[in-house]
Length: 385
Ligand SMILES: Cc1cc2nc3c(=O)[nH]c(=O)nc-3n(C[C@H](O)[C@H](O)[C@H](O)COP(=O)(O)OP(=O)(O)OC[C@H]3O[C@@H](n4cnc5c(N)ncnc54)[C@H](O)[C@@H]3O)c2cc1C
Image (cartoon, rainbow, N blue to C red):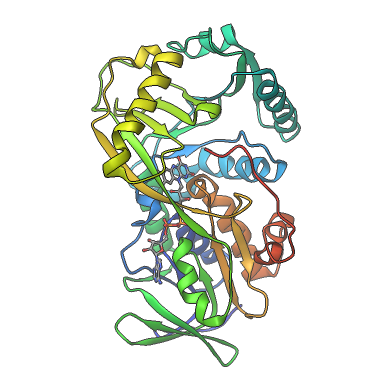
């Protein structure tokens, strides 16, 4: 990649201005001399990126995801210096506790902690009383213990990260157009993009960072990838002045997680909430209420009047799809974030930018290549929330 570009012709066109597209653009702009444009029909950061509450963790089941999250955590620890955002996003290391209710869960978590520690991730195992000491409000009686990482945390202002990436991209000369890309076709040794208004652009390289919606552009090219879309719901209380639950507590077997955010509101998730929100919402509330009563009774009198719906872009192995698409020279994808695209954006941006600008293929990028599904070479991640 290299050379001149003008408003109608780019070196790299990025379709999708969520956190993935922005991070890719930001990393690319440090590697190539101009010619990068981000297209988003709904505006910057308007997809799942607008919904996510800013959770950043390093505790995962696979070495691959843990190593990615370690690199991303290092970026985010230095986010003020790297992005110079107008408002500091404030990464608060509140800690994440994954609770084990039985011996098998405890053993699995312990194996993962050993793997994390090899990677430099400071997670550790806690027995039930230690967990309750670290997480006031947790009832130790129904649990055996859990894994804990005190570096895991939440951004107090996650949208300040998104705005920080966008503004820093602009300062680096990245262009933005608020329009959908409706069609992609081969055009010489590059790609022709058709925009929603009918105009065309040319790009030597295109990156689809458009979540599951990128499939609409791949279908006419006869490229099939198993990226689906699943609804997820977050339940929020009104802000509460008293601090009740600082760490994030995840009870995996109950598909339940809860945490009090920086503004005082308590966030609770029924991670298994599937169905029609109008018909099933009260059942999801009941599930949350039962989990609270059993595990975190400190939240017993908190109500959750606000429900927010968003979508995970999901894949069969719960891992992102990253890299060049076979048989489509110069067409790349970064999608299928499976609920962790915000926290992994720095490393995904770095890997894709290295691949495009320097032809340097990180081993992780190769592992998460789009062709792994057809080759049945999956790399399943189990510690999904
Ligand atoms: C309820 C919920 C909670 C979450 N919590 C967390 C969390 O705590 N931590 C975390 O790391 N992640 C979390 N996530 C996941 C995270 O939000 C996503 O993985 C991440 O935002 C994905 O970013 P993205 O840029 O890949 O996709 P998106 O943010 O969805 O962006 C894709 C963009 O592409 C644009 N687009 C699509 N098609 C076209 C087209 N044809 N032309 C132009 N533009 C197009 C869309 O308008 C959109 O803006 C959560 C998600 C949900 C739903």
